[in-house]
Amino acid sequence: GTGTVSLPDFWARRVRRLLPASCLVIVVTVVAARWMLSPVMLKDVGRDAVAAALFVVNIVFGNRNSDYLGAQAAATSPSPLLHFWSLAVEEQFYLFWPLIIIVALRLMAIGRLGIAIARALDEVHRAGLVHRDVKPQNVLIDPDGRAKITDFGLAGATEGISGGEARAGTPQYMAPEQFDGVEADRRSDIFAFGVVVHEMITGKKAFEGKSQVLLISAIATSTPPPVSRVQ
Image (tube, rainbow, N blue to C red; front, side):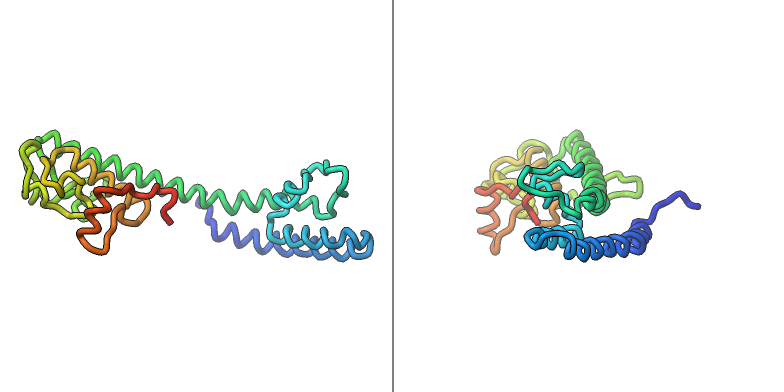
């Protein structure tokens, strides 16, 4: 009645209805094959049965040049479990699509949050300031999804921040030029923003080092790994 779908309930129904029936069909097929097929084919039938039980039989048949309609290479005979091709495809669809949807929704949420932070940072720069300490701890999100950048203790004008003053900040989010005392400007905040977004997506720091010296060296000389390769 509510118009909503519960994935756990959906999967519970599939397990109760589908798995017993599919297991029974596999067992009956293997027993029948034992009496009806030549011994040469029994090994293949055993492999097909395992693949069918794991819902990957379509991949096995695909590697064997088989297809769902029964067209096969001349040297092979149709498998008695060929009809499990479509069931394997269906189960893979139900297994992977929820994961794909969850990942897509997660990336969309990160995207919206990243845009909100970028807009807040743009407002800071339009006001003629460089924040110099952009990091997750200094970003607040209100109930409407708007980002607010806090802690302007190190903030200064967009021009003229150099020397020892430029080196102030949180090392893991500082741009390389800040460690050299080179004048810090909006680009330093944009670098820190990129580091924050990388951490939002991967859940890990973009730059790490066992000591501050090693951390500074990593920031100055290395590139963070692509987010697709971070586990």
